[in-house]
Length: 376
Image (tube, rainbow, N blue to C red; front, side, top):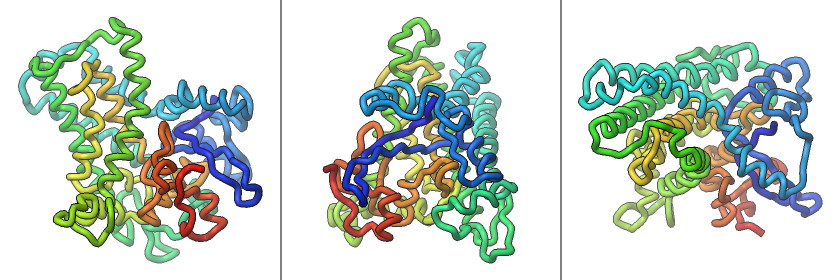
């Protein structure tokens, strides 16, 4: 199986011909296996979703077949980790049906269980990836693949990076604000559980009572998350000019200056950077999970979009090229601010509005100047 999170077409500087480019923004078996393998051979490539050298069904298909696979299965398979966590949360907190009685009123026992589950996920998934790519022995073998060779968590070459501490202070800031994000996410889950249990919001408890609707809903979440992220993110960057303000009609410049700039303090990001945001940005970012307010949902739908928002940014912000999660386009955004606002899937809005810069082309040119243009 292949692992895709998005796809775009760029033009080779040498030939001028279209070159297909595959993007990833999360981590899984493929990335773990790839990082382990490059420790002994830096040239080895892992192409299969389950850690095999080549994709199970061949290295390449036709352009049409690749596109069908991407939209029908590949993009969703790439977020299997988030879905498995959503299922685990459902089994732990919803499956026995007791929540429907218990959550009719807010009280500490059930709210505490929800918060504890979320904080455990934060420690497990963000903490593990930080340890794996910055603290463990595997981090040494990843050095040649780092986009910015500077280690953002070390002042001196002989300093060490801890699980929860750094000599630059960057890690402590990111952990603090990321934890605020997970807490806000957990409280949002509590609010929806209360809304459903108290009868204030309609839901359905039998997922397979409406199989087509339930599966189509899950399928659309992958698309929705990326579309929502682009517009939410773009809104927090200057709409016209970064020097303008709220009274000049540039809400984006105001939000960037007072809210989103906190996220961009991680100009050289790591796994804890993904949710290192101002609480106002957390509120906007997690609004992607409000879909049950518009479309009647099974709790699993809500949990999938919520944990997608919680976990997907971890790999995409880790700062490494393949064999890691390879969020190179988003690393460029952190480094240069006014390009690559979204993920080039399912709609490449950056290409559409002329703000797309391909990392490989940027490396050849050495600058983003002249590279931001619309689709050709």
